[in-house]
Amino acid sequence: MGFERRNIQGMEGYTPGEQPGDSNTIKLNTNENPYPPSPRVASAVREFSSASLRRYPPPMADQFREMAASRHGLNKDNIIASRGGDELLRLVITTFVDPGEVIAMTDPTYSLYPVLAQIQDCTTYKIPLETDWSLPRDFAEQVNASNAKLTFVVNPHAPSGYLIDGETIRNLAEDLNGIVLIDEAYVDFIDPRRGYDCLSLVTEYNNLIFLRTLSKGYSLAGLRFGYGIGNQELIQPILQKTRDSYNLDAFSQRIATAAFKDHDYARGTWQKVRDERDRISPLLRQLGLDPTASESNFLLVQLASDSSLTAKEIYEALKQQQILIRYFDQPRLLDKLRITVGSYGENEHLIAALRELL
Image (tube, rainbow, N blue to C red; front, side, top):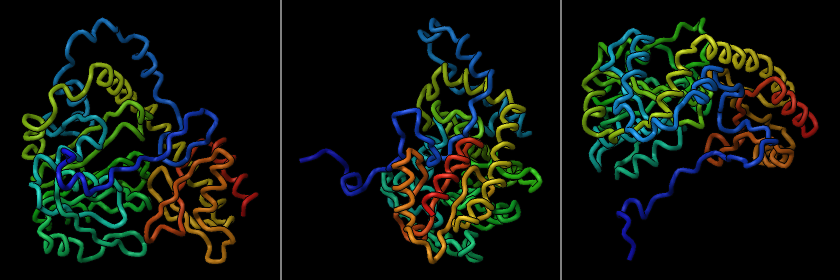
């Protein structure tokens, strides 16, 4: 007889994106920043003293929290640091959602959400997005009718890159009966001319929390460091009660702080990604791969109806050439591929390979 809980026995775990063991593969499948982290990160690594590892780290990452609060015009008590964004997702669920309660989300969405819901033995309620990937007009009504305690919304959306505007975010906080978590993992790649910034809403609504990560915008996917921004009624129970003690080690706190300080460098990489996103979109369209308008660091492309190859066949053919992109074996996405925006050189290799295939 096994020792797993009933709901764990019956579930499937999360399947992460492919991580090739060699450095020759052009990796455009998991939405990493194609540019290295700030030179200040390299300096912080060199200057880090191994002798400091004998002591426990700052328990609440206060230096980072203070810096993030200052950046966003908020109070330190509105900020919690976490081991990547994924830890924050788990903490929000375990802090606020009882087993058996409902967690709502869009369909499609980040595939970790339903896995975390199953771990907590919660019911998931999925609401299909419109054909343009926007929320249906009655989204809030559907969520409330399901009695969802928590709702996850990715913005910009994954895997489409669609951006929900700030007024809609405000309306969600206003209209939903439960907590709403806005996952802004890709927020750094939004065109600044869109004027998107909703973080001040956490001072108005006690049911609103935002997720940020340094994995994408700050080129630190290998470090695992993220943070949450929310009303103090949401942040403090997590910070004081359910967060693991010393959840962030001394090294990651030092490196994350160094990267976050060099905001100008990070913004430069975001603009390079936006420029490449704009450059390759028409090139992909010419090849019969129609990209959705994206405010993220990836493009979701749809194959032409008369394509001689399926999306899966294109994915597999590129993989044979050591180019990884993302294929989703799920409804609404079977004729689509998600392509991370790489560097100029990486994108040129991709376009050249696609021209030969298509």
